[in-house]
Length: 258
Image (tube, rainbow, N blue to C red; front, side, top):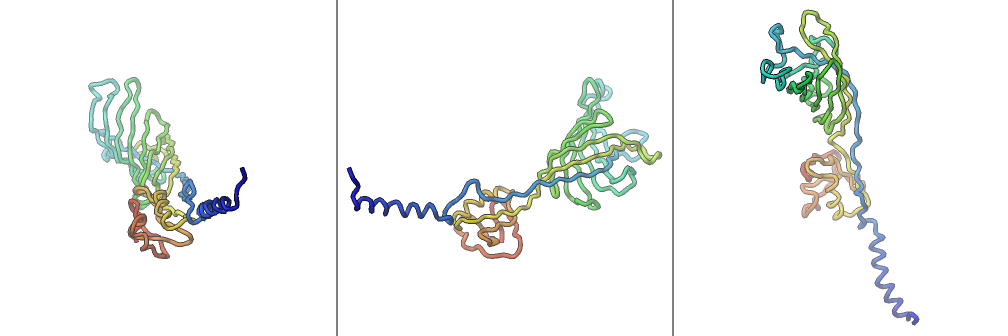
């Protein structure tokens, strides 16, 4: 059975609007969302850790015995110290303190001495990363070893990596410090970022912002169709208050604050 001109025209009238709507780039939301995420950075540094043991012959210990099982269990299993070790650029403990390793170490071995160590390396004001931290875990079982970098804050947000350490002689004979040379290898992702969003409408932009602003992990700068955007609440009824800005705006918890 053939098709009449009237039915063909009716079919075209139905299909053309649908085709135009699908072809409109301003109303098409591509997946995955076109977000530009920050690149991971890499830093290597060498420092020296100075441990002044909590022994009677040490006048200035930077650790304290918190739990003592040395006389009760083999190898002092469970014995715990809280420490505030210092880190310097060179092996001399009298040098400028650039960081502190604050945490605790526990004798966790029953058949051999093995000190489980958990600490936060806090960079001091005199360092290149004042206020930044690294979360470090590992074991001290011999003169050499490795610690894992499990996280970080400040300049080292979202850090991970490794610290190789080895014991070295103290450079000052009159000081009873236990010195470890640290080879620190850090990978980290900066907290701030720029999200570049193109080819979408303002209503669709509010949906895409779920990609750029999720919880406290937000893009500090949102560029939409070549405009730098800010608003009291990007996402709902107040989206119309968007305005052009010439500087970055802080972003907190899904909101870009003007």
